[in-house]
Image 1 (cartoon, helix red, strand yellow):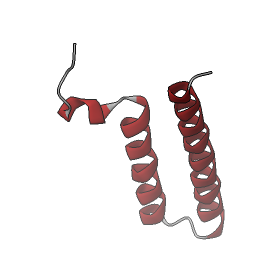
Image 2 (tube, rainbow, N blue to C red; image 1 turned 180 degrees about the vertical axis):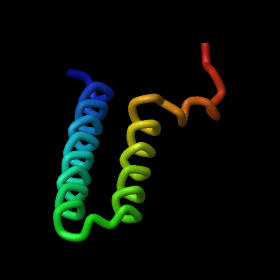
Image 3 (cartoon, rainbow, N blue to C red; image 1 turned 60 degrees about the vertical axis):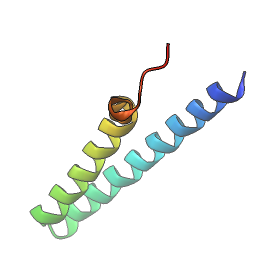
Length: 66
């Protein structure tokens, strides 16, 4: 496997683990306090991670190279 594929695989694993940790945090906050503000903040963070990594939004501002 070349380095670019290894880096993409590593990034995917990190993102999955990060989303899992944030989901566990959401669950814990919902059980302990039920604070809507904290749940909304975590949801926004998770949405930003998904948009950035899986929807490739960062490519919108890069020049295309053919």
